[in-house]
Length: 255
Ligand SMILES: NC(=O)c1ccc[n+]([C@@H]2O[C@H](COP(=O)([O-])OP(=O)(O)OC[C@H]3O[C@@H](n4cnc5c(N)ncnc54)[C@H](O)[C@@H]3O)[C@@H](O)[C@H]2O)c1
Image (cartoon, rainbow, N blue to C red; front, top):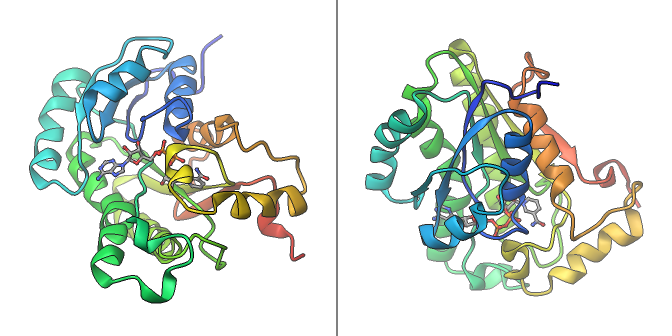
């Protein structure tokens, strides 16, 4: 039986641990027939170690998404390995410690700027770095945490995600003519490295225990991975600028 990504070539960022959402997207993408290439931050060695747990071997490229030299050389390395791309997964988020955990009113702009650069602007930088490889169109998928609300402890990652969500819409506007779709998966909380770096993350996660219509498992990144793979596939051909919630339905519940 052929998979829904058969014949597709996909670049996937953000594989750091097995708990990374991107690891599950990579695993499912391979299982569904895609050829993938991974990018790594901060060190390729970490990602290479985790990549050994994927069904098939894959090349790993170093990429700090705020580093213009890294972005500039991405095209050549990917072209040599895969020839072209049909999909790009942006699974990147970071905010300095003083931008998280209840320090919202005192965070210096420098830290806010870092959060915005790594977590929001990078969706545009990464996509533009990959654009020459997507001459036949493609699908760009990023990850957000619902930015319509102010959450406990999430602080400046909230405005960074709001910027990411707006960036996604503008990219959909500007890349539609090239048949490139841009969408986000809005995931519920998952106990990854990024999540553990948020002081008081369990308080945020606890909201799901109380309110999620579907049972939510903090230790299971696979549902988010499935959402990513679905958006990479040909099964959302006319969907762009969209945010698909993979959050157990919590976004629909008022109290
Ligand atoms: N874990 C959650 O609860 C949750 C919920 C919703 C959305 N998300 C989002 O999902 C995405 C993936 O996070 P995750 O939960 O899998 O955690 P993770 O820690 O496994 O992944 C975050 C990734 O960001 C990468 N990164 C950080 N700075 C970078 C830089 N300068 N250049 C390139 N890569 C960089 C890290 O290497 C890491 O791979 C993030 O956008 C995150 O905000 C996470």
